[in-house]
Length: 138
Image (cartoon, rainbow, N blue to C red):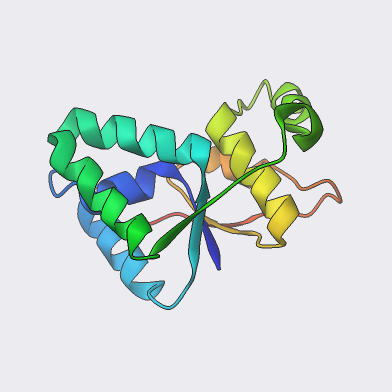
């Protein structure tokens, strides 16, 4: 299982992205991994794909979800997830809502591997101080 951040998946689905070939190579190596993400990341993915490739890019992402190549996980309510406290703790890094949702998901699922272009994930820690296993497709 691997947690999927917005950037690598958008690069994978957008052939014009400068990091497309890096993303393709990285995801090829993760073929047998169950890929999961959160609703906040999905929202970002849909936004960026719509911006760069219109509705067709969004449809490709939707097809991935329908075919179960990408699983969207729910999070506990904002109040009970600890997300607000995480974002406060990492305010100087910083941590946005989507990044925080992946850290919460890592905590909930026990999956500590995340594919991202965002180096901030090297700074983030789980509640027990454990670092995430960050994969950056470069």
